[in-house]
Length: 248
Image 1 (tube, rainbow, N blue to C red):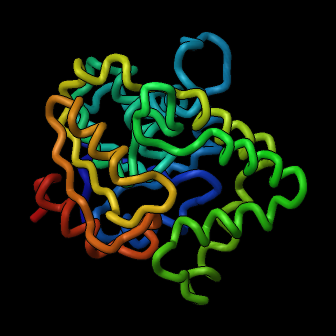
Image 2 (tube, rainbow, N blue to C red):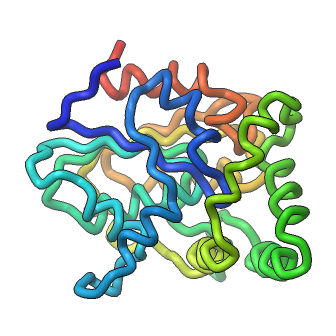
């Protein structure tokens, strides 16, 4: 699939995942896969707005100034980075496809849907004890209610090797602290939210809450699907995204 250099399309994986996790989706939608550790490294230099995460800074720094329209397809943590990037660069013409996305990952005192913060702190403690076991348990949770096949597991087993221990902790800290809800109502970009009805990591209610605030959002619940949408359901994700992207 040919992509115009003037309308770049980027696909951003989630926490502890790398390019192989989203490659089947990239083959269906086209686009360049951006590894989050590389974005963080690119955005860590001086001279940037410190109110923006290194991931979003790195992404914004890599987009050609001449591109009139940019499409971001983000999964989980990648969806939050895509949303933050679009909110931090309002002068561009953005289109967003957010897979299992949310504006606030953890549940807060306002009872917005999210993940208990204690779960993330337990993962941080688990990384110190056994990085491999913690990532393996997280991937199993991502795949529920399905089970990742041996072939798929073999394909993505090396994905987490691109993440240093520091970057893994930074990702969890971002998920604990980031709150993108302020300013959502001013977001004018069209957004497609695709969320599994059985997501055991980020509840569907979080996608519903995000869709209710974004002015130009469409929510596409995916019956029976869990969190690992680009890994286990690339065909269904592509079927929902292609019309939104005008590629049918």
